Length: 395
Image (cartoon, rainbow, N blue to C red):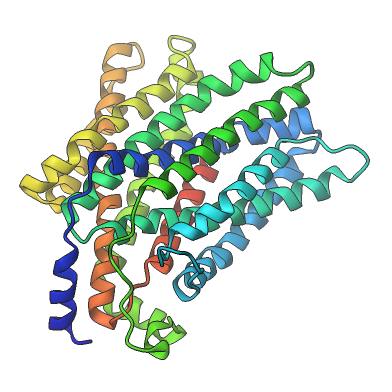
């Protein structure tokens, strides 16, 4: 299929997504971040102070699992692109996370389970690495789903922005739910955390299944025969060679998340040693989280008027201004520091919402240049970046 034919075919799928379907799509983001932020914020403490293994063993486990992610995530993306699971609707992405989310929920509970009669270290290694693999297996297809729901870039921006908004709510919710539930659901810290994760995992499973039941894949795979329909290694290399927007977007994606990592990682030390109790670490963290959620609601409309590129640039500038205010503001000026923190977070939220919503556009461009959709491969890069960003937040 040549470029003109592909363009004409794609134009048929500029579908406006109903509001209810957008809500259903965003709901998976709430459940996903509810689980992943819980793992990011509390697992290290759980392993060392409740589960009973050393900090050195935990560090080694996290290091090895991230090395494995560098292999597993792109490999899973290629598998999802190549393997089409049988289903009555002939969907490509939905069957993957619909079938794997319940095993993912079970393993999430096991990660926060203290075993009896078996090696704790072996149990921790097995459950955590399987958890990471299943997180990849459910995340790549559900993230890729937006590119299959519509070809309209503005509609995809709305889908992804609302999903990021829900993810932010999920991330904030875990910081409230986990301490509250873990103290009330168990007679010991071990049972408290395990039962808390049962509740959180059930919410997560419901969120993914809601997305799978109410969302539709409208954009078909482009295939002329089996050989052309299968993604090969040469296709992967060609994708990275010809899909220049993808490379630019990955660079922007990593730059934005690196900015957030630096700001988040130094926050605890800044509050502890510079502000000396004037504000809690929790409140300072909320100043980073809550303002970044707000742009998710207006970025789609703003992108429709001025373009995603302008939104990213504006968000980046606002984020830098906010960081600069925090840098130059004296420690005695708590109000000024909080304002700068909020401004920086607002700018980051604008930039990351526009960057994230542009990822499906690179799937379309990749299909244009090589004639095949490689959403799984492309979005696997996003899941790996998410893991890197959230793992760094543990440090």
